[in-house]
Amino acid sequence: MKKLTIADAAEYFKVSKEAIHNRIRRGSLDCIVENGVKYVTVSSEKTNSVTNNVSDNRYTLYIESENERLREKVDVLEKETTRLRDQRELMLINERINVEQIYKERDAQLRNILNVVATKFLSHVSEDLVMQEAMGETVEADAINADIVPDIEVGEEWITLKSFLKLKRYGDNIKKNIKRRFKAAAEEGDERFIVRNEKVYLSPSLHDYSNLLAGR
Image (cartoon, rainbow, N blue to C red; front, side, top):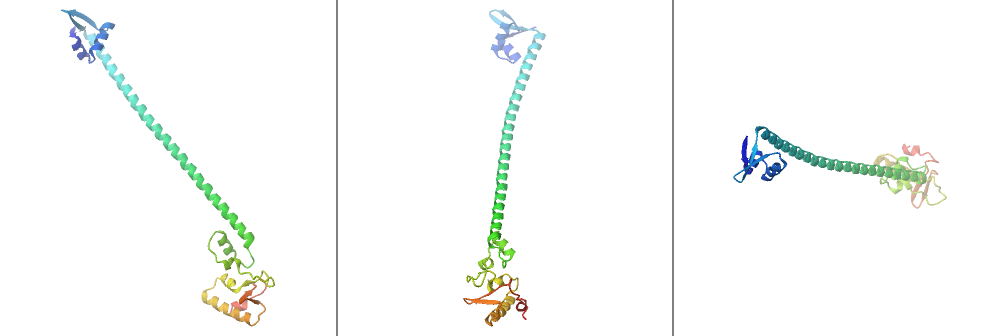
């Protein structure tokens, strides 16, 4: 059996003096008084029990500390998960908006094509030029509008020589020769041509110009 002062007992059991007094009051530690001094008496069995209690307390504190640390880590992970989920939802919303915008632009482009085809697709205008204008590409006004002769006597079948040559995929030198031959024929009174305001008009839908195109 050991006899310890309150201070020695606190040091021995690694607790505070107040804890020793509380255990004495509860009867978990034996106490004697000698010459006015209070001593704690402990047997080996008591020592082991108290030591085990101290160890248990320390283990409990460690477990509680670990639990708190894990809870904090879980909170951080939950916040990160929420942030990533919100970010993903925002990306999906933006992507949907972009897709919707693309389809709107395509729908508008298709409507433009249909409008151009409905209003400007004349017999003498190539389909490629109409599609270019509908797609918003730069096309010279003569190519689509074709300088239709304002004189109603001429009729809508007639287009200018300039417009006719623009629609042909010939080289510049070939176009110059064709233009020269066509003008010469018009000035000679060829009935396949009409001259108005110094402009030469022809009608591919009414007449055949293959001989002039071939240089015959």
